[in-house]
Image: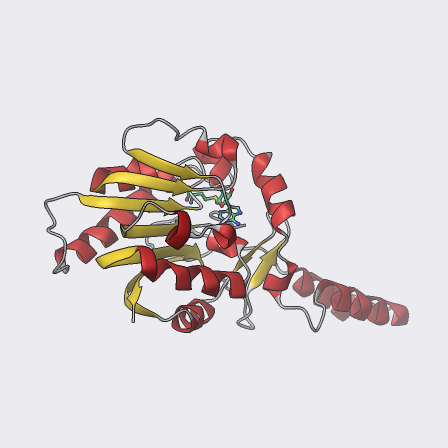
Length: 267
Ligand SMILES: C[S@@+](CC[C@H](N)C(=O)[O-])C[C@H]1O[C@@H](n2cnc3c(N)ncnc32)[C@H](O)[C@@H]1O
């Protein structure tokens, strides 16, 4: 899932274990068929993304921190603390924004119920816009202090350069970019510099794939992918963005996917 997620035993590992212990000659060919079915050869993980299925899943999820964090509400506090520290470092190094004055406008992308808006962004910016396709989630944020425009749309269809209220000093994307295909993600990231103020940052904070073969991992529960660090860096490059700073989130419970935060600027 694009939320915090426990590392899972790969189905294929189980299948291989079965093969090693079986005496049945027919089983190996059954297993080969099963593996071919679970891992179609010409299919990239992101090509399995289905937006309709994703929205159906998220729309049936309770509009709470527990719901948007996939049953790990306890990571929210440490996540927000890590993000706050990361942002504070960016601000201390900035020539454009003084660390003791609020940013003018930020946007929380794939915002869910506005967990990050409420716990971080509205403390550092005067106004925070929200982009989130699921209305039952944004209803939780609508009307709260510091919340500006709300766009009920997926990021693949959000065109801030045409309809946005930018420029934005900070564009925050967390635990939602796995809902986009690689091509949609690059197109989306390419649209952002037009609405980023001078000296502003695009922040991406996402789970990293821990696949032993270095592949992205598709999750059918919310129809999303977890990408490798290398894939993220390549896509940022393709989108014309420069990596300014990056850190691994520390302090999450053991067994969850690693989470990395990236600060990007136009090249
Ligand atoms: C794991 S939740 C994270 C919410 C929020 N970023 C947070 O960290 O609390 C994933 C969010 O992505 C949203 N989402 C699903 N498809 C999306 C899309 N195509 N574009 C943007 N967000 C999407 C879901 O509705 C959900 O709110």
